[in-house]
Length: 397
Image (cartoon, rainbow, N blue to C red; front, side, top):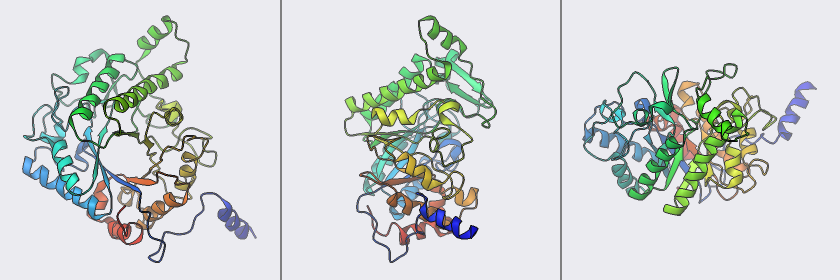
């Protein structure tokens, strides 16, 4: 009897769905956003090593773009600013060390321009992926003289091994806006994309990070501000999001602005998942406000958990696409963790199933998926590329 009741409950729960689409299932939708993140930080995806020649870097990037096209995708998110640097020609920030091994040293060509040219040949959109606040993933690495951490040293702080720029400092926000304006006015981009790093992540949910922003907060209070420290931090991030949104609408109308926040908003939202890290209270990000204010053209919450788990993929996607979280019906593209085929031992069927779920759960006018990251697609780990093409991406969108 217990087994029967459990099975019945699973059938009735909103996140319970049929198994992954079979070869006899209906064809995929003709319009669907299908993207993939290409990470440059720590040379995770591209370039595979710092210091490769320009021709070697180009050859590797072309191979990844070919992978995206072969897998039925239609957009790539190239990480062009992993640590307040540039994988493109910039007068505002130094060349990334992930290209040459030395921050500030030119690779001899413009990687972003090359990526756009080659992506267009393959019918792929290119979105410039930016980390707004990370100044250095390793504080011990040498930084160029024109790096933002030296320009605004008093607004730079260290958490463990990483350097961050203070989101509460207006000069920091102004600098980020200048970087984005430079990108959207000089490159034929389809979008600007932020990842999930705002205020620093804690090591775990029981150990909050010490953020040395007391002087800025004190100045805010002395000037008549009344927000609590947490609300003030969220307001600092909101100011940047609103300004970026306005800038893009003004200077590059039609270009998209999107963010891939941590996949769980806060405790109790939704109520049917277990919450450990709470992005609203721990990293001071409020993506629901961004949706409600219409500051973003899409969100891609990082739903990096298996379905029917304590952090169920389908339960979370149902919530993000609900009227409660998203009253404007802004497109929600599910962030899918294809990297967990190798890092967490997922079967390929879990990834395929999650793609199917995105089509079943309130897809609205803007259904889609973005995969983190391209490595396992490129390697066809556990046959994932073959299965995606055969079972869910049989036709291009």
